[in-house]
Length: 472
Image (cartoon, rainbow, N blue to C red; front, top):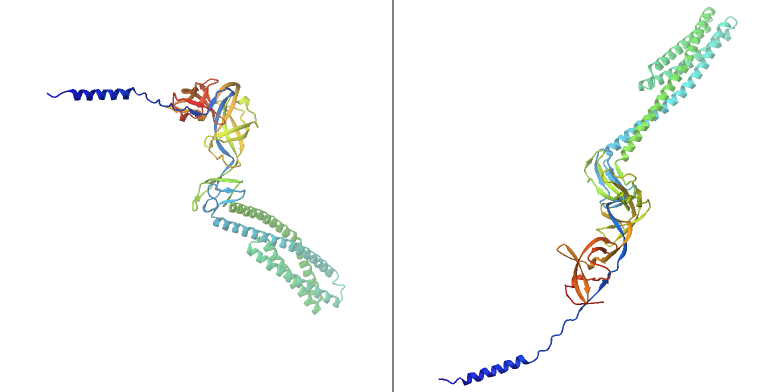
Protein backbone atom coordinates (compact mmCIF):
# COMPACT_ATOMS: atom_id res chain seq x y z
CA UNK A 1 0.00 0.00 0.00
CA UNK A 2 1.38 3.21 -1.22
CA UNK A 3 1.85 6.14 1.15
CA UNK A 4 -0.72 9.05 0.65
CA UNK A 5 1.66 11.72 1.93
CA UNK A 6 2.72 13.07 -1.49
CA UNK A 7 -0.90 13.65 -2.52
CA UNK A 8 -1.63 15.33 0.74
CA UNK A 9 1.26 17.74 0.32
CA UNK A 10 0.24 18.54 -3.27
CA UNK A 11 -3.28 19.38 -2.12
CA UNK A 12 -1.99 21.63 0.63
CA UNK A 13 0.26 23.53 -1.81
CA UNK A 14 -2.56 23.99 -4.33
CA UNK A 15 -4.85 25.31 -1.61
CA UNK A 16 -2.24 27.76 -0.41
CA UNK A 17 -1.64 29.12 -3.97
CA UNK A 18 -5.33 29.48 -4.65
CA UNK A 19 -5.88 31.34 -1.37
CA UNK A 20 -3.04 33.72 -2.13
CA UNK A 21 -4.42 34.52 -5.53
CA UNK A 22 -7.93 35.15 -4.35
CA UNK A 23 -6.76 37.16 -1.39
CA UNK A 24 -4.77 39.61 -3.62
CA UNK A 25 -6.86 42.84 -3.96
CA UNK A 26 -8.05 43.76 -7.64
CA UNK A 27 -7.30 47.06 -9.26
CA UNK A 28 -10.59 49.06 -9.56
CA UNK A 29 -11.90 49.67 -13.15
CA UNK A 30 -12.31 53.37 -14.12
CA UNK A 31 -15.93 54.58 -14.87
CA UNK A 32 -16.62 56.12 -18.39
CA UNK A 33 -16.75 59.95 -18.65
CA UNK A 34 -20.24 61.52 -19.17
CA UNK A 35 -21.13 62.43 -22.87
CA UNK A 36 -21.11 66.13 -23.69
CA UNK A 37 -24.31 67.22 -25.50
CA UNK A 38 -26.16 70.40 -26.50
CA UNK A 39 -29.47 71.11 -24.81
CA UNK A 40 -32.31 73.60 -24.94
CA UNK A 41 -34.02 75.04 -21.90
CA UNK A 42 -37.76 75.17 -22.57
CA UNK A 43 -39.25 78.66 -22.41
CA UNK A 44 -42.90 79.12 -23.46
CA UNK A 45 -43.48 81.42 -26.48
CA UNK A 46 -46.64 83.45 -27.13
CA UNK A 47 -48.25 82.21 -30.33
CA UNK A 48 -51.57 82.67 -32.08
CA UNK A 49 -53.46 79.70 -33.42
CA UNK A 50 -52.76 79.04 -37.09
CA UNK A 51 -55.14 77.93 -39.81
CA UNK A 52 -53.35 76.18 -42.65
CA UNK A 53 -54.79 76.47 -46.17
CA UNK A 54 -53.61 74.50 -49.19
CA UNK A 55 -53.72 75.48 -52.85
CA UNK A 56 -52.06 74.94 -56.20
CA UNK A 57 -49.66 77.32 -57.90
CA UNK A 58 -50.95 78.77 -61.18
CA UNK A 59 -49.41 81.13 -63.76
CA UNK A 60 -50.55 84.71 -63.34
CA UNK A 61 -51.68 84.42 -66.98
CA UNK A 62 -52.29 81.29 -68.96
CA UNK A 63 -53.65 80.68 -72.45
CA UNK A 64 -54.58 77.46 -74.22
CA UNK A 65 -53.98 78.29 -77.88
CA UNK A 66 -56.36 76.50 -80.25
CA UNK A 67 -56.39 76.12 -84.01
CA UNK A 68 -58.83 78.29 -85.95
CA UNK A 69 -58.41 76.58 -89.31
CA UNK A 70 -58.15 73.04 -90.65
CA UNK A 71 -54.63 72.19 -91.83
CA UNK A 72 -51.67 69.89 -91.10
CA UNK A 73 -48.94 71.02 -88.69
CA UNK A 74 -45.99 72.12 -90.85
CA UNK A 75 -43.37 73.24 -88.31
CA UNK A 76 -43.04 73.50 -84.53
CA UNK A 77 -40.64 76.28 -83.55
CA UNK A 78 -40.75 75.95 -79.74
CA UNK A 79 -40.27 73.05 -77.36
CA UNK A 80 -41.72 72.32 -73.94
CA UNK A 81 -40.44 74.82 -71.37
CA UNK A 82 -38.95 77.25 -73.90
CA UNK A 83 -39.27 80.96 -73.10
CA UNK A 84 -41.30 83.05 -75.56
CA UNK A 85 -41.85 86.74 -76.11
CA UNK A 86 -45.10 88.24 -77.23
CA UNK A 87 -45.54 87.62 -80.97
CA UNK A 88 -43.01 84.79 -81.21
CA UNK A 89 -43.91 82.10 -83.76
CA UNK A 90 -44.68 78.82 -81.96
CA UNK A 91 -46.38 76.58 -84.54
CA UNK A 92 -46.92 77.01 -88.29
CA UNK A 93 -49.67 75.20 -90.16
CA UNK A 94 -49.60 74.32 -93.87
CA UNK A 95 -51.00 77.43 -95.57
CA UNK A 96 -50.70 76.50 -99.27
CA UNK A 97 -54.45 76.35 -99.81
CA UNK A 98 -54.98 79.58 -97.86
CA UNK A 99 -52.32 81.36 -99.95
CA UNK A 100 -54.04 80.22 -103.16
CA UNK A 101 -57.40 81.54 -101.93
CA UNK A 102 -55.77 84.82 -100.94
CA UNK A 103 -54.23 85.23 -104.41
CA UNK A 104 -57.60 84.49 -106.03
CA UNK A 105 -59.32 87.05 -103.79
CA UNK A 106 -56.62 89.62 -104.60
CA UNK A 107 -57.06 88.99 -108.35
CA UNK A 108 -60.84 89.36 -108.07
CA UNK A 109 -60.37 92.63 -106.18
CA UNK A 110 -58.00 93.94 -108.85
CA UNK A 111 -60.46 92.97 -111.59
CA UNK A 112 -63.30 94.76 -109.77
CA UNK A 113 -61.15 97.87 -109.34
CA UNK A 114 -60.21 97.80 -113.04
CA UNK A 115 -63.88 97.48 -114.03
CA UNK A 116 -64.72 100.41 -111.78
CA UNK A 117 -61.99 102.47 -113.49
CA UNK A 118 -63.34 101.61 -116.96
CA UNK A 119 -66.85 102.59 -115.94
CA UNK A 120 -65.56 105.89 -114.57
CA UNK A 121 -63.87 106.56 -117.91
CA UNK A 122 -67.01 105.54 -119.80
CA UNK A 123 -69.13 107.86 -117.69
CA UNK A 124 -66.79 110.77 -118.31
CA UNK A 125 -66.74 109.96 -122.03
CA UNK A 126 -70.54 109.72 -122.03
CA UNK A 127 -70.83 113.14 -120.44
CA UNK A 128 -68.57 114.67 -123.07
CA UNK A 129 -70.38 112.84 -125.87
CA UNK A 130 -73.81 113.88 -124.63
CA UNK A 131 -72.67 117.47 -124.43
CA UNK A 132 -71.15 117.31 -127.92
CA UNK A 133 -74.14 115.54 -129.47
CA UNK A 134 -76.53 118.00 -127.90
CA UNK A 135 -74.56 120.94 -129.16
CA UNK A 136 -74.21 119.47 -132.66
CA UNK A 137 -77.88 118.47 -132.79
CA UNK A 138 -78.96 121.90 -131.65
CA UNK A 139 -76.76 123.53 -134.25
CA UNK A 140 -77.99 121.13 -136.95
CA UNK A 141 -81.61 121.77 -136.08
CA UNK A 142 -81.09 125.51 -136.13
CA UNK A 143 -79.27 125.24 -139.44
CA UNK A 144 -82.00 123.09 -140.98
CA UNK A 145 -84.70 125.49 -139.86
CA UNK A 146 -82.80 128.47 -141.16
CA UNK A 147 -82.13 126.66 -144.42
CA UNK A 148 -85.79 125.96 -144.95
CA UNK A 149 -86.84 129.52 -144.08
CA UNK A 150 -84.21 131.17 -146.23
CA UNK A 151 -84.43 128.77 -149.14
CA UNK A 152 -86.19 131.23 -151.31
CA UNK A 153 -83.84 134.13 -150.46
CA UNK A 154 -80.53 132.38 -150.98
CA UNK A 155 -78.56 132.87 -154.12
CA UNK A 156 -77.19 129.77 -155.80
CA UNK A 157 -73.56 130.10 -154.50
CA UNK A 158 -74.82 130.54 -150.96
CA UNK A 159 -77.08 127.52 -151.30
CA UNK A 160 -74.27 125.39 -152.66
CA UNK A 161 -71.88 126.39 -149.86
CA UNK A 162 -74.52 125.74 -147.18
CA UNK A 163 -75.34 122.30 -148.63
CA UNK A 164 -71.66 121.39 -148.72
CA UNK A 165 -71.22 122.46 -145.06
CA UNK A 166 -74.25 120.43 -143.99
CA UNK A 167 -72.96 117.34 -145.78
CA UNK A 168 -69.52 117.66 -144.19
CA UNK A 169 -71.03 118.04 -140.70
CA UNK A 170 -73.33 115.06 -141.29
CA UNK A 171 -70.43 112.92 -142.50
CA UNK A 172 -68.34 113.82 -139.41
CA UNK A 173 -71.27 113.02 -137.16
CA UNK A 174 -71.78 109.67 -138.92
CA UNK A 175 -68.11 108.74 -138.51
CA UNK A 176 -68.19 109.64 -134.81
CA UNK A 177 -71.39 107.65 -134.32
CA UNK A 178 -69.83 104.60 -136.00
CA UNK A 179 -66.77 104.81 -133.74
CA UNK A 180 -69.01 105.06 -130.69
CA UNK A 181 -71.03 102.07 -131.95
CA UNK A 182 -67.88 99.96 -132.25
CA UNK A 183 -66.94 100.84 -128.68
CA UNK A 184 -70.43 100.03 -127.36
CA UNK A 185 -70.45 96.75 -129.25
CA UNK A 186 -67.18 95.72 -127.57
CA UNK A 187 -68.50 96.67 -124.12
CA UNK A 188 -71.74 94.78 -124.80
CA UNK A 189 -69.79 91.62 -125.68
CA UNK A 190 -67.87 91.97 -122.40
CA UNK A 191 -71.14 92.34 -120.50
CA UNK A 192 -70.30 95.88 -119.35
CA UNK A 193 -73.44 97.55 -120.83
CA UNK A 194 -77.04 96.54 -121.25
CA UNK A 195 -78.91 95.65 -124.45
CA UNK A 196 -80.77 98.96 -124.17
CA UNK A 197 -77.51 100.93 -124.32
CA UNK A 198 -76.38 98.89 -127.32
CA UNK A 199 -79.70 99.51 -129.14
CA UNK A 200 -79.48 103.23 -128.43
CA UNK A 201 -76.01 103.31 -130.03
CA UNK A 202 -77.28 101.43 -133.08
CA UNK A 203 -80.12 103.94 -133.56
CA UNK A 204 -77.65 106.82 -133.29
CA UNK A 205 -75.55 105.33 -136.09
CA UNK A 206 -78.61 104.79 -138.27
CA UNK A 207 -79.81 108.37 -137.82
CA UNK A 208 -76.34 109.74 -138.49
CA UNK A 209 -76.15 107.72 -141.69
CA UNK A 210 -79.59 108.90 -142.79
CA UNK A 211 -78.58 112.47 -142.16
CA UNK A 212 -75.37 112.00 -144.11
CA UNK A 213 -77.32 110.52 -147.04
CA UNK A 214 -79.85 113.35 -146.86
CA UNK A 215 -77.12 116.00 -146.76
CA UNK A 216 -75.33 114.34 -149.65
CA UNK A 217 -78.53 114.36 -151.67
CA UNK A 218 -79.04 118.01 -150.83
CA UNK A 219 -75.53 118.86 -151.98
CA UNK A 220 -76.05 116.93 -155.21
CA UNK A 221 -79.30 118.78 -155.90
CA UNK A 222 -77.66 122.09 -155.08
CA UNK A 223 -74.90 121.33 -157.51
CA UNK A 224 -77.50 120.39 -160.16
CA UNK A 225 -79.52 123.55 -159.50
CA UNK A 226 -82.96 121.95 -159.03
CA UNK A 227 -84.69 124.44 -156.68
CA UNK A 228 -87.79 122.33 -156.22
CA UNK A 229 -85.71 119.40 -155.20
CA UNK A 230 -83.68 121.80 -153.05
CA UNK A 231 -86.83 122.45 -151.08
CA UNK A 232 -87.45 118.73 -150.65
CA UNK A 233 -83.85 118.20 -149.51
CA UNK A 234 -84.21 121.05 -147.03
CA UNK A 235 -87.32 119.41 -145.57
CA UNK A 236 -85.55 116.05 -145.33
CA UNK A 237 -82.57 117.73 -143.70
CA UNK A 238 -84.88 119.35 -141.13
CA UNK A 239 -86.47 115.99 -140.27
CA UNK A 240 -83.06 114.44 -139.85
CA UNK A 241 -81.96 117.32 -137.60
CA UNK A 242 -85.07 116.84 -135.43
CA UNK A 243 -84.36 113.12 -135.11
CA UNK A 244 -80.77 113.92 -134.11
CA UNK A 245 -82.01 116.37 -131.51
CA UNK A 246 -84.36 113.79 -130.02
CA UNK A 247 -81.52 111.27 -129.89
CA UNK A 248 -79.32 113.84 -128.17
CA UNK A 249 -82.02 114.31 -125.53
CA UNK A 250 -81.74 110.57 -124.69
CA UNK A 251 -78.01 110.96 -123.86
CA UNK A 252 -78.55 111.78 -120.12
CA UNK A 253 -80.41 108.48 -119.76
CA UNK A 254 -77.30 106.66 -120.94
CA UNK A 255 -75.18 108.59 -118.41
CA UNK A 256 -77.64 107.71 -115.66
CA UNK A 257 -77.36 104.02 -116.56
CA UNK A 258 -73.58 104.28 -116.38
CA UNK A 259 -73.81 105.94 -112.95
CA UNK A 260 -75.97 103.05 -111.77
CA UNK A 261 -73.42 100.57 -113.09
CA UNK A 262 -70.69 102.57 -111.37
CA UNK A 263 -72.52 102.22 -108.05
CA UNK A 264 -72.82 98.48 -108.53
CA UNK A 265 -69.11 98.31 -109.36
CA UNK A 266 -68.27 100.20 -106.14
CA UNK A 267 -70.37 97.73 -104.13
CA UNK A 268 -68.56 94.86 -105.88
CA UNK A 269 -65.21 96.36 -104.86
CA UNK A 270 -66.35 96.51 -101.24
CA UNK A 271 -67.42 92.87 -101.33
CA UNK A 272 -64.18 91.76 -102.96
CA UNK A 273 -62.19 93.86 -100.48
CA UNK A 274 -63.95 92.08 -97.60
CA UNK A 275 -63.25 88.69 -99.18
CA UNK A 276 -59.58 89.59 -99.65
CA UNK A 277 -59.20 90.82 -96.07
CA UNK A 278 -60.87 87.64 -94.76
CA UNK A 279 -58.45 85.56 -96.84
CA UNK A 280 -55.53 87.44 -95.27
CA UNK A 281 -56.95 86.80 -91.80
CA UNK A 282 -57.29 83.09 -92.61
CA UNK A 283 -53.71 83.08 -93.88
CA UNK A 284 -52.45 84.72 -90.68
CA UNK A 285 -54.28 82.09 -88.62
CA UNK A 286 -51.88 79.46 -89.98
CA UNK A 287 -49.11 81.07 -87.92
CA UNK A 288 -49.58 80.47 -84.19
CA UNK A 289 -47.87 83.20 -82.14
CA UNK A 290 -47.43 83.79 -78.41
CA UNK A 291 -50.15 86.13 -77.06
CA UNK A 292 -47.82 87.32 -74.28
CA UNK A 293 -44.34 86.65 -72.89
CA UNK A 294 -43.89 83.54 -70.77
CA UNK A 295 -43.03 79.86 -71.07
CA UNK A 296 -44.36 76.96 -73.12
CA UNK A 297 -46.18 74.87 -70.51
CA UNK A 298 -47.68 72.29 -72.87
CA UNK A 299 -47.14 71.16 -76.46
CA UNK A 300 -50.17 69.24 -77.72
CA UNK A 301 -49.30 68.56 -81.38
CA UNK A 302 -46.44 67.19 -83.43
CA UNK A 303 -45.34 67.91 -86.98
CA UNK A 304 -47.69 66.26 -89.46
CA UNK A 305 -50.72 66.20 -87.13
CA UNK A 306 -53.95 67.32 -88.77
CA UNK A 307 -55.83 69.91 -86.77
CA UNK A 308 -59.21 71.60 -87.13
CA UNK A 309 -60.85 74.58 -85.45
CA UNK A 310 -60.92 74.02 -81.69
CA UNK A 311 -57.95 71.63 -81.58
CA UNK A 312 -55.57 72.55 -78.74
CA UNK A 313 -52.05 73.33 -79.99
CA UNK A 314 -50.10 74.52 -76.95
CA UNK A 315 -50.42 76.29 -73.62
CA UNK A 316 -48.45 79.42 -72.75
CA UNK A 317 -48.12 80.70 -69.19
CA UNK A 318 -46.54 83.75 -67.58
CA UNK A 319 -44.76 82.43 -64.49
CA UNK A 320 -42.46 85.30 -63.48
CA UNK A 321 -45.47 86.07 -61.32
CA UNK A 322 -47.78 83.35 -60.02
CA UNK A 323 -51.05 83.11 -58.13
CA UNK A 324 -52.48 80.58 -55.72
CA UNK A 325 -56.17 80.03 -54.99
CA UNK A 326 -57.24 79.08 -51.49
CA UNK A 327 -60.58 78.41 -49.82
CA UNK A 328 -60.77 80.23 -46.48
CA UNK A 329 -63.27 79.16 -43.78
CA UNK A 330 -65.96 81.70 -43.02
CA UNK A 331 -64.55 82.24 -39.50
CA UNK A 332 -61.34 83.51 -41.07
CA UNK A 333 -62.90 85.72 -43.75
CA UNK A 334 -63.42 88.85 -41.55
CA UNK A 335 -59.69 88.94 -40.78
CA UNK A 336 -58.65 89.06 -44.44
CA UNK A 337 -58.23 92.18 -46.57
CA UNK A 338 -57.19 92.91 -50.11
CA UNK A 339 -53.46 93.73 -50.48
CA UNK A 340 -52.77 92.01 -47.14
CA UNK A 341 -49.22 90.62 -47.04
CA UNK A 342 -48.85 86.88 -46.48
CA UNK A 343 -46.13 84.23 -46.70
CA UNK A 344 -46.40 80.91 -48.48
CA UNK A 345 -44.38 77.70 -48.27
CA UNK A 346 -44.10 74.63 -50.46
CA UNK A 347 -43.41 71.14 -49.19
CA UNK A 348 -41.24 70.54 -52.26
CA UNK A 349 -39.07 73.56 -51.37
CA UNK A 350 -38.13 73.02 -47.71
CA UNK A 351 -36.61 75.97 -45.92
CA UNK A 352 -37.99 78.51 -48.40
CA UNK A 353 -40.88 80.90 -47.93
CA UNK A 354 -42.36 83.36 -50.42
CA UNK A 355 -43.94 86.76 -49.84
CA UNK A 356 -47.16 87.66 -51.58
CA UNK A 357 -50.34 89.71 -51.33
CA UNK A 358 -54.01 88.88 -51.31
CA UNK A 359 -55.22 90.25 -54.64
CA UNK A 360 -58.82 89.06 -54.66
CA UNK A 361 -61.30 88.15 -51.98
CA UNK A 362 -64.59 86.36 -52.50
CA UNK A 363 -67.75 88.01 -51.22
CA UNK A 364 -69.94 84.92 -51.40
CA UNK A 365 -69.38 81.67 -49.56
CA UNK A 366 -69.64 78.30 -51.26
CA UNK A 367 -73.07 76.83 -50.52
CA UNK A 368 -71.59 73.40 -49.70
CA UNK A 369 -68.25 74.02 -47.98
CA UNK A 370 -69.06 77.50 -46.57
CA UNK A 371 -65.62 78.73 -47.61
CA UNK A 372 -64.64 81.94 -49.37
CA UNK A 373 -62.28 81.96 -52.37
CA UNK A 374 -59.13 84.04 -52.03
CA UNK A 375 -56.34 84.60 -54.51
CA UNK A 376 -52.75 85.33 -53.51
CA UNK A 377 -50.35 86.76 -56.08
CA UNK A 378 -46.58 86.79 -55.64
CA UNK A 379 -43.42 87.52 -57.58
CA UNK A 380 -41.47 84.53 -58.83
CA UNK A 381 -38.20 85.93 -60.24
CA UNK A 382 -36.23 82.73 -59.72
CA UNK A 383 -39.02 80.57 -61.15
CA UNK A 384 -38.92 78.38 -58.03
CA UNK A 385 -42.71 78.18 -57.88
CA UNK A 386 -44.02 76.22 -60.84
CA UNK A 387 -47.59 75.52 -61.97
CA UNK A 388 -49.49 72.82 -60.04
CA UNK A 389 -47.04 72.80 -57.11
CA UNK A 390 -48.80 72.50 -53.75
CA UNK A 391 -48.51 75.64 -51.63
CA UNK A 392 -49.38 76.15 -47.97
CA UNK A 393 -50.64 79.34 -46.38
CA UNK A 394 -50.57 79.62 -42.57
CA UNK A 395 -52.85 82.33 -41.24
CA UNK A 396 -52.78 83.23 -37.50
CA UNK A 397 -56.18 83.57 -35.87
CA UNK A 398 -57.43 84.48 -32.41
CA UNK A 399 -55.45 85.79 -29.39
CA UNK A 400 -51.89 84.68 -28.54
CA UNK A 401 -51.29 81.87 -26.01
CA UNK A 402 -48.07 80.54 -24.46
CA UNK A 403 -46.86 77.52 -26.41
CA UNK A 404 -43.83 75.27 -26.13
CA UNK A 405 -41.61 75.06 -29.23
CA UNK A 406 -38.74 72.69 -29.88
CA UNK A 407 -36.54 72.22 -32.94
CA UNK A 408 -37.65 69.46 -35.28
CA UNK A 409 -34.14 67.98 -34.93
CA UNK A 410 -34.75 67.29 -31.21
CA UNK A 411 -37.57 64.84 -31.99
CA UNK A 412 -37.14 61.09 -32.33
CA UNK A 413 -39.70 58.55 -33.45
CA UNK A 414 -40.42 54.96 -32.53
CA UNK A 415 -43.38 52.86 -33.69
CA UNK A 416 -45.39 55.94 -34.58
CA UNK A 417 -44.66 57.69 -31.26
CA UNK A 418 -42.73 60.93 -30.87
CA UNK A 419 -40.32 61.42 -28.00
CA UNK A 420 -37.48 63.63 -26.77
CA UNK A 421 -34.68 63.18 -24.29
CA UNK A 422 -35.02 65.33 -21.18
CA UNK A 423 -31.86 65.78 -19.12
CA UNK A 424 -32.55 65.27 -15.41
CA UNK A 425 -29.62 65.44 -12.95
CA UNK A 426 -27.10 64.60 -15.66
CA UNK A 427 -29.01 61.58 -16.96
CA UNK A 428 -30.92 61.31 -20.29
CA UNK A 429 -34.56 60.37 -19.77
CA UNK A 430 -36.81 59.41 -22.68
CA UNK A 431 -40.13 61.25 -22.65
CA UNK A 432 -43.00 60.80 -25.09
CA UNK A 433 -44.57 64.00 -26.47
CA UNK A 434 -47.56 65.03 -28.60
CA UNK A 435 -46.53 67.42 -31.36
CA UNK A 436 -48.65 70.00 -33.13
CA UNK A 437 -48.23 72.23 -36.15
CA UNK A 438 -44.91 72.91 -37.80
CA UNK A 439 -43.72 76.49 -37.30
CA UNK A 440 -41.25 78.70 -39.18
CA UNK A 441 -37.53 78.12 -38.73
CA UNK A 442 -38.00 74.35 -38.52
CA UNK A 443 -39.69 74.41 -35.13
CA UNK A 444 -42.72 72.44 -33.96
CA UNK A 445 -45.30 72.95 -31.23
CA UNK A 446 -45.32 70.41 -28.39
CA UNK A 447 -48.88 70.02 -27.18
CA UNK A 448 -48.16 67.55 -24.34
CA UNK A 449 -45.13 66.06 -22.57
CA UNK A 450 -42.97 69.11 -21.80
CA UNK A 451 -43.14 72.03 -19.47
CA UNK A 452 -41.22 75.21 -18.79
CA UNK A 453 -37.62 74.82 -17.57
CA UNK A 454 -37.27 71.29 -18.98
CA UNK A 455 -33.91 70.79 -20.66
CA UNK A 456 -34.18 68.92 -23.96
CA UNK A 457 -31.30 67.32 -25.83
CA UNK A 458 -30.85 68.64 -29.38
CA UNK A 459 -29.25 65.44 -30.74
CA UNK A 460 -31.43 62.50 -29.63
CA UNK A 461 -29.88 59.98 -32.00
CA UNK A 462 -26.70 59.91 -29.83
CA UNK A 463 -28.55 59.08 -26.61
CA UNK A 464 -30.15 56.14 -24.89
CA UNK A 465 -32.28 56.04 -21.72
CA UNK A 466 -30.23 56.35 -18.50
CA UNK A 467 -27.08 57.54 -20.23
CA UNK A 468 -24.99 59.99 -18.16
CA UNK A 469 -24.49 63.24 -20.00
CA UNK A 470 -22.87 66.60 -19.48
CA UNK A 471 -24.59 69.69 -20.90
CA UNK A 472 -22.65 72.33 -22.74
